[in-house]
Amino acid sequence: MTPRADIDVRPIAESEFADWQRALNIGFLREPTLSEEVLEARREQFTPGRSVGAFDDGRCVATFRSFAQELTVVGGATVPADAVTNVTVTATHRRRGLLTRMMAQDLAAAKERGDVVATLIAAEYPIYGRYGFGPATTATEWTVDVPRAGLDPRRAGPEDGGRVDLVGGEAVRKLGPELHERLRRAQPGAVSRDELWWRTATGAVRFHPTFQEPYYAVYRSAGGEVEGMAAYTADDHWGDAKQPSNTARVKWLTAVTPAAERALWLYLCSIDWVTRVRSGWRAPDDLLPHLLPDPRAAAVTTQADWLWVRMLDVVRALGARTYGAAGSLVLEVTDRAGLAGGRYRLEASADGTGVCAPTTGSADLALDVAELSVLWLGDESAVRLAALGRVREERAGAARQADALLRTSRRPWCPDVF
Ligand SMILES: CC(=O)SCCNC(=O)CCNC(=O)[C@H](O)C(C)(C)COP(=O)(O)OP(=O)(O)OC[C@H]1O[C@@H](n2cnc3c(N)ncnc32)[C@H](O)[C@@H]1OP(=O)(O)O
Image (cartoon, rainbow, N blue to C red; front, side, top):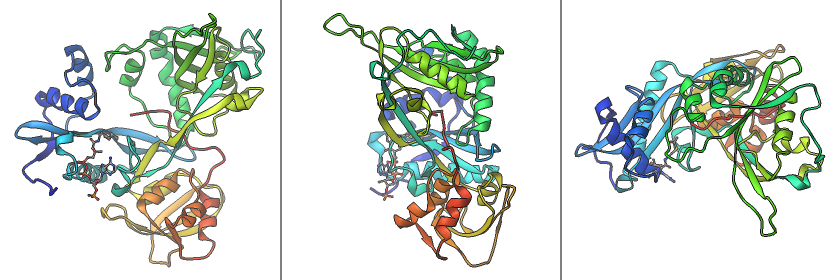
């Protein structure tokens, strides 16, 4: 169907928030009528100028929101990101170009503002590649079959002098933000969280009527420092022979030291009645399986693309991260939206820093901005993308050299959904 120019795409006024929120819920197949309480809670997410709607005859039929975020890159620097979320087009108005219009407006504004990249978590894989986004991190979920893990059933807690305690939501709101700051500043692919994140995660603000209050476990080192925290829920399931068979579901687990990671996973795998632990979305190289005497007890339940990145400023994006080797690489970047295309030379030094600038020199690798966005955080291999026909070597060996520069020893990971 042809796009309809009479459908207005524009930032919403605060007075239109309830209508916008109703459209958002319909697009995400949630209940169309929101309680006053949920509506009030969600009002906190209203971002003036960046909560966009499409209106047909005065009724909201599409939603789109973006907000300011910081994304950590390889080496620990952060770049300003345009975080895209709440994208819906009501089924009566789909495939008429409304998402394309909202995205084009948002990316142009982000570029103008000076954001280095745009980010999102994609509901479905085929939606965002056409706009220059590529999947830059992967998330893995394991299900631990606790009785098969080989753990000592008499285990009574950490053996490193540290301790695990259960705390309430208030303590999480107090201790969590600093802990997460430590994690995300050292974790490529991690993003900033605002204070509202902590209030919604702990139920102080409720976006969904069905919020289940989690248990919160905190790990303190022998020196008393908070180094890790996990939020989990448990179901109430009993087998036919009166055997407890409960599943603990980890909502999030933040650990800034390997000791904290070990202590929290082993705690979760030692709760009486719990026979299965679902890990929640973790880095694909998370330590979890190898903390168990029998790593096969941790089976991969899901593995999927996670954070999608869309580079807006190649010079600053490549200049912000560090590199695994010294070398020079010229990239011919195509961008059909005209935001980040061009030919760029990356010069990486032996100290790990890199400088990127436009060049007229001959290209080593030719690729779309979506593929460069995929390679940027170091998780994907240029050699692999060349084999798939998604990057082209203009100089033999350039893909292998790109891998030597860009790839990392630990994989990038984004712990958040937004
Ligand atoms: C970051 C987030 O918020 S993720 C959440 C995304 N939202 C959802 O998944 C909710 C349910 N889905 C929807 O609301 C809509 O289908 C949207 C928002 C995904 C797409 O909106 P539309 O207005 O229909 O997209 P639009 O008409 O601009 O489509 C542009 C192109 O993308 C394609 N496309 C859009 N959505 C999809 C999809 N889900 N799968 C495959 N192709 C798609 C269209 O076919 C079109 O292709 P063409 O240019 O070759 O004709």
